[in-house]
Image 1 (cartoon, rainbow, N blue to C red):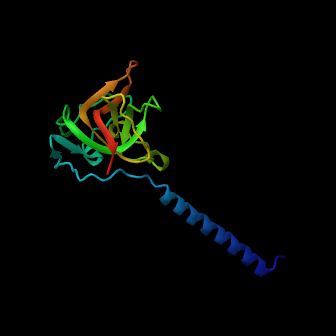
Image 2: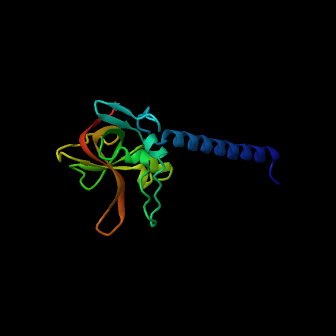
Image 3: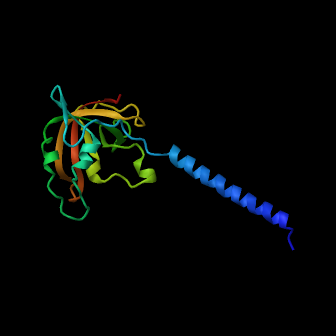
Length: 179
């Protein structure tokens, strides 16, 4: 027969261990929370235009509800995005380089630097494919948000196999650190 004091002491250690684990999980999840690009003041009804450049935020893009489901026909872009097609825009976000780790002349612009670590990866309609007009444009630090200026394109783009690879694109004239 175990002594009641030893049993109570063992239960306290188990409870203490559970509390420590819970606190560690909370601390790590807050510490690893996805960074968000600088919040844009751009809302659905108030695009800002300065010097011929329309400032577009990811909130505006998400509010447009350009929903895409892989394997189904791509719907036409909503009017709120079609009005930007062919216009010069400025968008801030995080660059996820594609193809060339050295050149970084083509990348995906997303709202969050590490959004897919603890949540769902961004959907195709929530990413912007950026192609730099100048092949010498480089991104110095992919851990920090960037500000991209260039011509916006809306609508599906497919690869040679017929897969939709992008819905939103910018042909970048400038890419620089945000802020």
